Length: 389
Ligand code: AMP
Image (cartoon, rainbow, N blue to C red; front, side):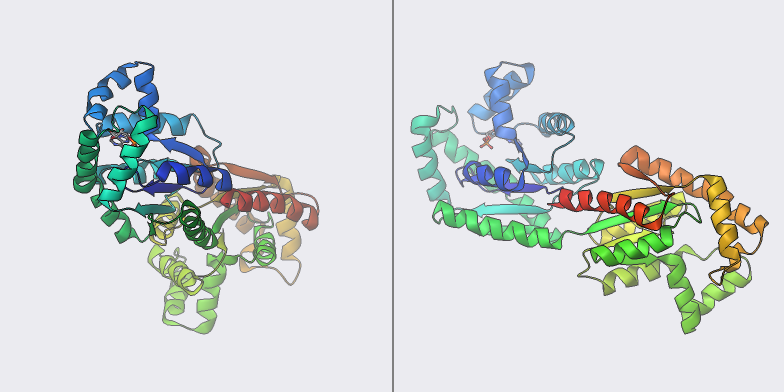
């Protein structure tokens, strides 16, 4: 998804620039002003409530705005992304927007602020007023709208400046030049977009070898917490010693250690196209931790894949592996294999269920040859890459 907010005083050219953005990036346009005007024209309850406020150039209540935005988003579940025009208009609405984005498991990628001095806005709006038929395009109301903009809307910029996803564009240039500046800003943002995948599957489902192959094929960073822990042990690092102690005492490795390892990996891979997580999260607690880590890096989970393999086939595979030199310490007896499968059912399946409620989980048939399964997973990954832009 790509979500953009167009920001700027009345008359900055947001409407004009939005036409380009909608077409170029296939976005769904949400102009709170347009929606309010159409409610007003149809004389709905909401429209009537907003009428006098719009007529004097004031701001409609946040409650009304939330209702119309939420309704529009809900009615367009398959949108490739949203373009907000005229929202957020108060710093309270900036928080509301963040909340709405979390609900959609997405984020606002960029707030584009088209900057135009007050006298230029007045000039343009008076000119527009000659033909627009809008009840708020006259001198007195225009001044009021600009005052509201200065007092209530401008503080929104501080919110996004602090977050860093804000870009100012000079709006007093030829329309084409403004468009090309906007295009550059959006493309730069798109380059930063990552694809973060969580790959689930029972032990023996092939998630390790597939995850590694997918990471290589699509230039993603492979994050296997199990591998990272083993690496620390073999390096003999301080973390490794703690992990070893946990292993020897039969304890689970603490979340503190795993968080540090994932954080380190993410920091070292700042320019990665994305991450593919294997073997993490394994529990509900870890699923919240992963959300927290990604949030901190301003990232989200874009794709969840569950490899599905029949239990008898899993036992057969793990038993076969135990007879090869790829045998893992935890493959050596039937009792151990059963315990691992049980652990997956009891602890990890609830995590997958949680994700199924929130996101689309792609369930991929993990039987058949490695290449066949690789093809199936590749189709999923490619569709997610497409959805990014
Ligand atoms: P616009 O077409 O964006 O210039 O909006 C026209 C009028 O609709 C504004 O002057 C406000 O009265 C109202 N309005 C539009 N969007 C919002 C918003 N996000 N919050 C409050 N009022 C809004």
